[in-house]
Every structure is written in C-alpha cells, then in structure tokens.
Amino acid sequence: MMTMDRIEQGLACFRDDLRATHAYAVQPSAGLVKLDVMENPFRLPADLQRRLGERLGAVAINRYPAERTADLAAALAAHAGMPAGCAITLGNGSDELITMLSMACGRPGATVLSPMPSFVMYEISARYQGLKFVGVPLREDFELDGPAMLAAIAEHRPALIYLSYPNNPTGNLWDAALIEQIVEAAPGLVVMDEAYQPFAAAHSMPLLERHPHVLVMRTMSKFGLAGVRIGYLIGREALIAEVDKVRPPFNIGVLNAEAGLFALEHAEVYAAQAAELRAQREAVFAALQAMPGVKPYPSQGNMILLRVADAARTFAGMKARGVLIKNSSAAHPSLANCLRITIGTAEENAAMLAALKESLS
Ligand code: PMP
Image: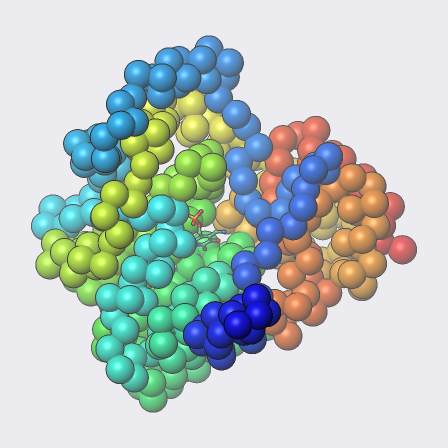
C-alpha cells in the first residue's frame, strides 16, 4: 500500500468530532512583552533560583515519582487550609484535573455545565470525553444569570458544574448568594475553579466546608510556576478517591514535585509577588478607566478584560509595538471587541498602556 493510503487509514481511526477541531492554540511570543496567558512575570530572586537548581540537581530521576509527590500533596493541603475530612489529588496542571473529572463523571448522557464565557477547557474536555456541555450566558455585566443557571440546572441535571472564581476571562468574582443557590440546586458536583485565588479577595474553602458536594480546584501556575504544571483538587475523601482512580500513574514528575515543594517553602516570596501584582492591577485599571475609547471590567484576577472599538485592529497595533495580549473577541458573542491583558511588571504594564493608547485609533 502507498504511504498516503496508510496515513489515510490512520486518519480514519480518529474521531470525526476531533478531526473537525483544532489543537489548543499557543500564540508565538518570542521577543514580545508577554501579557497573554496570566503568567506571573516575576522569576525567583537569583539566590533562590540557584538553590532551586541545587535541589533539583540532587533529585534521583532514575526512579518513578513516589514519596515526594505525597510530600507535595501534603504541603499544598496545608498551604490551602484543607478542611478536616477532605483529601487532595494532584494534576499535571489543573487542565489535567479537568480531564480527569470529565473521565470520572463520564457516564452515558452525563452533562457538564458552566457559565459562558468562562475557561474553554470545561467544554473542550467534556466534549472529548463524550459528555454533553451546556453553557449558560452570563449577564451583560458578566454577573451570573441566576434564574438562567437554575433553569438550566433543573433541565439538564449536570453531573459537573464549573464555576471559575474569579472567572477567566472576565476577571470578576460572582455574587456569593447566587453561588450558594446554585450549589444548593446542583444535583451533582460543583467545582470551584480557583486558578486566580492568589489575586482574589475571596475563596471557596468555607463553601466547601458547608457543602460536601463542592470541590475546590487550584493551580500553582498563576502563583508563579506555570512551567512546572501542578494543579490540585480538594474535596471530601470519598469523592477525591473516585477522581484519583482515573489519574494517570506518576502524573507529577519528580523535578516538578521538588520545584513545587521548594516554592511552598518560600511561599512568602510568592505572596509578595502576588501583592505587587494586585497593586499593579489596580494601577492599570485606573489608567484604563482614564483612557478614552476603552472600557475595562473590574478584576480580581491577574488580568483585565477591556472593550475597545476595534479589537482586531488594536490587538495587531499592540503586537506591532511589541506587546502580546489576548484577543478574546471570538471566544463568545458577549466578548465582541474585547481584549484580555495580563498584569505584568510595572515596566511591562507601562509599555502595554503606551502601546494600547497608540493602537486605539
Ligand atoms: N482554570 C482557569 C480558570 C484557567 O484560566 C486556567 C488557565 N488559564 C486553568 C484552569 C488551567 O491552568 P493550569 O493547567 O496551568 O493549572
């Protein structure tokens, strides 16, 4: 058989729905001020970076990960203030936890529900695992639409509800009373995705304590370890035990576990970085509010969503001036002409604001 025929034969094995989609897109960023994916712009101070190198240099990489992963899980549980009666499981980023949840809850006909727009992986992961996905539009001010959420929950009886708290890309924390109502009405699990918790004024551990069907998902990515890929999920022991069954064995590499532990030993360094980013966020928000032709939305994350007259043009203008942000316009109709900027260092933010101003007209 010809090579091409053999490739066709291979392609025919893949699912039609998969072949009709694109892989998760990562924008090329070389040489640009990188404010596109909510990374922490700060590295470790040089002396800590050197000590991390020494720690990693001593790790036995000939063995599969074992105790150090358990040590990391325990350290994260302590860091997060895990309530009594709960357990924790780790993912290779919270992306992997989302995949694990879809797999674990993927009974025939099962549904995943989240407000829209929100983090895209809830839908992508649900679809890839054969679950139905229901997206409930947010209100125009990006608050949860309480009646619409409750109606959708009653109609679709979702196994999993995701609430990104704060929400990506809109940056806001939703109304606590509405969340409580949604949690009360949920017939399955409610996952509070707290990827942006280091920058937010509220979190969901008290909700988890009150409601045993709530899970709290967090990540070390926005904390300052996006390259290390560690996410964690906390919930009642019996629930976490089920999710843990679909976790790929040894999903956290030994070097990653060691780096995560090292970071938690220096949590005060990261706390100071987060505080600086929160202050920068407020300064950037004020500057955006004062800029004609820009409507910024208040944020509790390390990003700000803003609306301009022509997002494609502004995005291209900023890129031409060396600043990479995210054009969120295509993600959802309610995000028409919306751009999402990540909060960077003071210098990066100044460069971003200058490039934005010049790219508006
Ligand atoms: N949840 C939310 C709300 C996010 O915005 C992101 C990434 N942008 C993630 C989860 C995934 O993060 P990670 O896989 O790096 O932990």
